[in-house]
Every structure is written in structure tokens, then in C-alpha cells.
Amino acid sequence: MIENINWYPGHMKKTRELIQENLKLVDAVIEVIDARIPLSSRNPVIDEIIKNKKRIVILNKSDMADEIQNKKWCDFFRKGDNLALSMNCVNGEGTKELYRMLGGLQAEKNKGSLRQKPLRMMIVGVPNVGKSSLINRMTGKRSAKTGDRPGVTRGKQWLNLENNMQLLDTPGILWPKFEDPKAGLNLAFCGSIRDEILDTASLALELLTVLSCEYPEMIEARYKVKVLQRPENRLEKETELYDEDGFPISPQLALMNEICRKRGWILAGKKVDYERAGRTILDEFRSGLIGRITLEQI
Image (tube, rainbow, N blue to C red; front, side, top):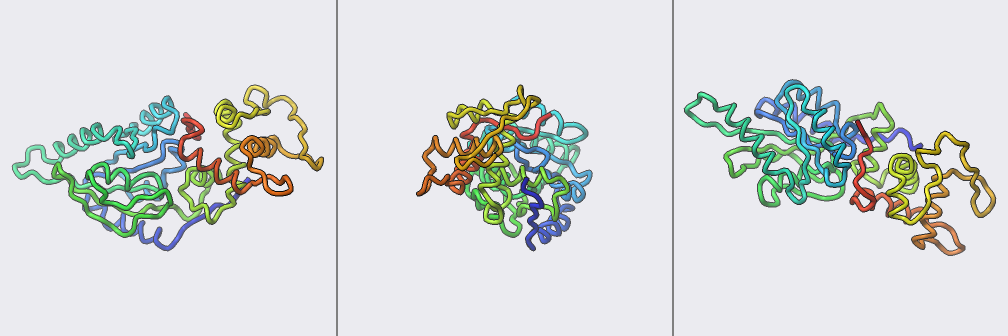
């Protein structure tokens, strides 16, 4: 297993300070998380900072997550005084419902007041969960920079919305150390940690290990291969597998080798192109081509 995935650039510390400094200026916080990894994409540091401030949890990229799990996680986050909503910030699904929620908060703020004040909000979340896409959807223009690489947003931006609301954007914030190694892996799977600091082939192998257990039928359908260690036979004795040189290999590595052969990812000398395999498998998972997958389930 890939261990000790840690990434805490200097601007992360500045982001924490930025959130703390500006929290008193807003009425509510919109926390954007990745619907595929609802817990791993929630920064506990943000919990500590925000505390009892009104919060709306947006499960973004819900179109790539298990639909049943989306509903369960929304119910989970609605416990207490929080609001929660599944969204696809790229195509705008869920935007009307979000504005309905925000309208309710704005009406609550101005209840009994002659002078109508704008609802002021702050958007927070770890890198690459889709904060900028949400902002662009809410403003109807490209107000915030977006990209498929984490850490695109820089500094803070106050943005005016058409309904007399104001929005404060902040850069993505990760935490100094992942107490649970699985959280670091899940974030890496979904692209919230730069691939440049990781071994993509090993990361893809870890992902295949997870998906072979939880979503074997999707792996089989996408790559036209047979997953040997399916959930229903995991208690059976593991099949002994060997590579072309006669060395024993894990079922997951055998699976990756078979995917490479099916896709033609073979180098000179009939060597498997693990680098290309790693990049492609991760890209296909992150883009939803393998299927609607939730790595953390209730």
C-alpha cells in the first residue's frame, strides 16, 4: 500500500488563516466535497474553524457517484442544523435547489428588518472538489479559474451574485497529515493530490484493488477482463498466480497485466507499460468512464 501521502504547501497555511480572518464577515459557509469520497474530502481543520456557523454541504460530482449512496450521504450531513445537496457543478444540476436554500437563509437573516442586507457566504473545500465550477455556475460566468489540477485558485475573491448575495471564494485547503492512510489514498484516487508527487502506476494498482472488491462488475465491463477475487469468493483460498517469468504475483497485478494486454499497452520486448496503464486507469475513474462509484459507503 502507498503510505504517508502528505501534502501541505505554504499556501495551505495561508488559506487556513484567510478562512479564520473572514469567517466573521459571512452568514453561512458552503462546503464543497467530492460525492465519491464524502468523508475523505472533508477537512477536519475546516470543522474546527467553522464550528457552529451555518453550513451547506455540497456533494459535487454526484453524477460520478453511486446514486443511492448520494441520497444516504445527504441524509447523513443533514443531521443537526446543516443543509446538504447533491450537485453536478459542471452541468448545473442542483443549482436551482441551492438557490432555494440560500433564499431561505437570506429571508431568515432579514426577517423583521426594514433594510434588506445581502446574504454573504464563503466557499471552502479541499483542492479539486469543484469549488470554482460551482462559483462559475452561480455567477453565470467564468469568475473563478478552474482546472483538473488541484490548487488552481489563488488568494480570496468577493463575488456579487445576481440575487443580491455575495460570495467569498478561498483556495483549497488540505491538512498537514492524514491520520487515516485511506483518506490520503482516496484523495489521490480522485485527483485532489498532485500526481507529480505520486507513483501513478502504484496508485492505479491500489485503485484496482479497491474496485475489484467493491465494483468488480464495472471493472469487467470496462476492460473486458475477469476479476478473479470477487467479493463472493474472497474467503476462498486465493488463486496462485505467476507472471511470464514464473514469479508469483498478486491478483491485482495480474489484473493490471491483463488490462494492459487487452488495451495493447505493451512496450518493446513485450514489457507491460505500467506508466501508461496507471495514467489511463486513474483518468477513466476520475472522469466516470468506469462507472458511478462511491468509495466510501454508508
